[in-house]
Image 1 (cartoon, protein in one colour):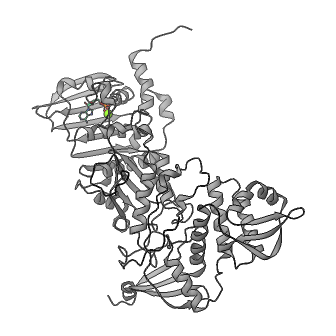
Image 2 (image 1 turned 30 degrees about the vertical axis):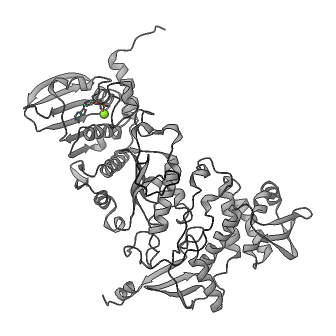
Length: 592
Ligand code: ADP
Ligand code: MG
């Protein structure tokens, strides 16, 4: 076989594959160019999911008449001059590849008038080769129309996804950029119909209202310029610090089936980073029902020289230089905002989607109990994606999350009714007790070893062969939680001690529940397994739904719940209570 040098055209078609995989990526590149050009308004018009045409018009700086052809050459960019510039990129584009790549696989028409020029230029290209050029009258800015994408690369055409998929991705993309650049007015149309527009007011919240609707938008909690505390200084210190986080997060009552409502921007660039996404999810730990994901729109600002955006041609991944991944910071910013601001679950608000009063009821916080060791301080082996624990060890000194409550009574042998300053609470006694036990046991185990209670009479529990094997493997974890289980003949264990926190329930029931959890969770990473053991233990030990409780018992439980760090849900994420404000009651009675 002969070795040939590829023609320039073929070489750019091959290179185009990396930058323009699909209509969505064309929109992304053109949108970034318009933003880099300083546009105040950007209109995006898509036909047939972008296959037929993609047109993007902006009122930015425009391309000077004598540079318009150059812009379509490979490695032509006005955004980078030297290698040093690469170390601190402030624009979205910098590789000088997009226009060349897009043009090589489509038919392009561009009309542009640069700032200060009296007329514009219209240029057309077919598969990257200029086919016409003329001087035309045009407003300042640039309009690029990309038609018949991949018409000359049939192989690629064949692999295009459905119009619907492309539309969904493009909708998502445009809304993300609208969030990152609220001063820019965006308008997106598909086949002539407007599907999204932002007003360019400069307010992120206005864009959020457009995306999620006013109901969800007004429940969002704001993270205001959260800074990395320089050692020994308060987070609010005025000294400039390297990373600032701002944005909006959803309260625990707003949750989604997928994690794609966690949106991250680094210096105005929308990025995908599974570790940072995971940090946000972790911050909601035990607050959401399992399998549900929160909403979070986070903007990270850090010196451009600390982030490397030149990791991949599509520029959606970044690397944080010098291992400065702001993982722990993101988690803390989200967690603290949640703990401080999350409104209580109110009647009718679980699950998400129904009406909710705004804001938290605003009562005085009670006295702060001793800071429990949060689950973030756990020193068990982490899962592969978990953060280094050192990053997240700092716990917030909690204030009481709940108001002081007065016991009213019990209903259905299951729900405790209490009165708070502004309304009434219906507490699920089982869920609440689970939460109380869980936090106690967790705090003890996290400190090293949970307290044990040696049983006056040991109990034998029979196990399956499978469970016996698992017990051998995971015995250490159970010991750490306070269990002392001794082998006793084939497939039987003698329960000598149980976690002191869980004492009072039947030891055999407890051990059986934990063994079942061990079986179910055997493939989980260690930290998650421990968690599900903990949950199963607390489940088994908590008061049952049909237990009628004496007034003192209920009062004790209420008081314990008040002291919890996350009193709003049980460890599995279900609510511990429903709150009905006096105002809401009045509304229900038609009085306001
Ligand atoms: P890059 O964005 O990496 O510089 P592109 O191939 O996307 O590379 O664009 C090449 C150049 O064309 C840009 O550097 C810019 O000077 C010019 N350009 C492209 N789109 C626009 C636009 N919408 N407005 C003004 N200039 C543009
Ligand atoms: Mg570009």
